[in-house]
Amino acid sequence: MGIIKLKNIRTFSYHGCMIEEGKIGSDYTVDLKIKTNLEKSAQTDHLADTVDYVHLNKIVTEEMAIRSHLLEHVAKRINIRVLAEIKTAEKTTVWVSKINPPIGGDVESVTIKMSEIRH
Image (cartoon, rainbow, N blue to C red; front, side, top):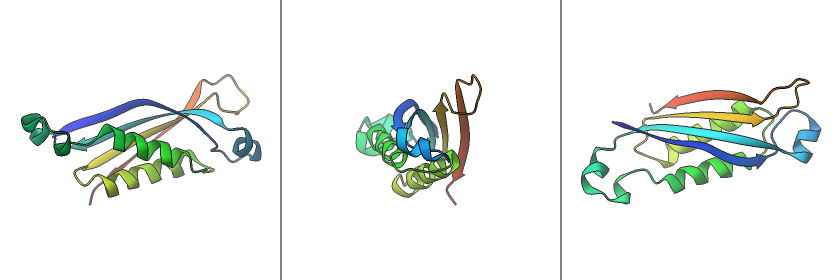
């Protein structure tokens, strides 16, 4: 077994419950961690035998481009899509962070974390 993690995928997206958030957008970061079997790729040294990081990054950026009111909604979509498209992924965990959220205080970011397991 093994873990692949993409850290600090940066996007500019339009998530949030306020109308203004859908118009002006905000900076986000996403971390993605998947549990998968890395034994075959460790032996063969072939990209076809592992999870392509480019594919994972594409999933995250495409899902972050779809407006959601809640970070939980976009995180769930990312997790479900990873499990649907990456057949060797057994578990996926995503952290979605809104940088400098408009919550009336000096807050660097707000982050949600969600996981899904293949059944």
